Image (cartoon, rainbow, N blue to C red; front, side, top):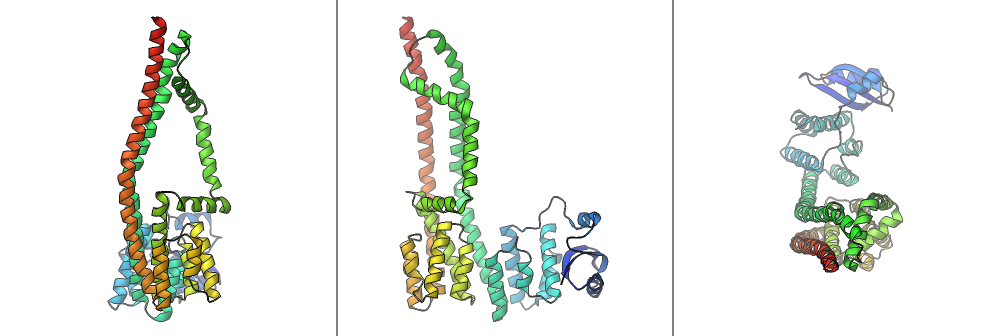
Length: 403
């Protein structure tokens, strides 16, 4: 059945844009009229005219929802369904009270898809840019089990926990990053602006400069002449991380770094156990839950460990042993998962592990920030002091030559 893009005016005078699956254009117009809307146009998706594309487009806007918006909308829908409202009325209310045009467009498309006879999970699957596979899988399980309101409430909690953890990491790293940028900028300024002022004086004297000064001048020349090539090399190396093999090696290396590696392990364990526990408590089978969870990790080393666990579970060997052999997640997470398997309470124990590792991640972030600030300051001070010391040695050698 083809998809038609339509433009209509609702009974309240608002423009409605969306996509509707229908046998022909007349069916689309008939459905819009039954909904109380006045159709303006309905074109086959992908073949509309240039004017139609301009009418359907939100210039300068993206229909992809932010994580904050998805979490807020999920919590709002869960609240209304728990209060006894049916899905259609809840969706209509959310469209009317949408905070911005982007949310209104996505919600309108979801409402129309549901009104056309599709399930909420099917409607969400059509908006993959805003709702990931994890989201759709949980909603599908909730609809199948008749617990959509409770499922959306659990999903909102999952999204809020993930957002809070990410916000904690981002806000904590602001100060070290600003300090690092200031340190690098100060050193580059000395090497590219201050040092060149002394080089002609050294060359005119004809004296043999001290070794530290020679090294400093060589570094300054490299930064001034080849700094752009070094920046280009960094960009190329970043592109190389998109190659699966290179990215897998980089992800494994990060997990084994002395200080940052422990933090990454805690965050990865929190994300894995929180997602897995939420899926299991909402009725998703273990193998399907692991398949959805692997997509939410964002670390290829963790993905490889979960893939090994899937094969182990299919063979009846359990979840914890292959994860332990992978040496990716902290021992505490493995222990709690093993305990959950032994007591047939894997979902609750996974969520308990998530709470522990989220708290551990916050503590590690605090310690890392407390360590990074003084470290960057000391390194910056030492580098600047070294630059000035090298210049002073050269000046003293010139003074000795003049005497």
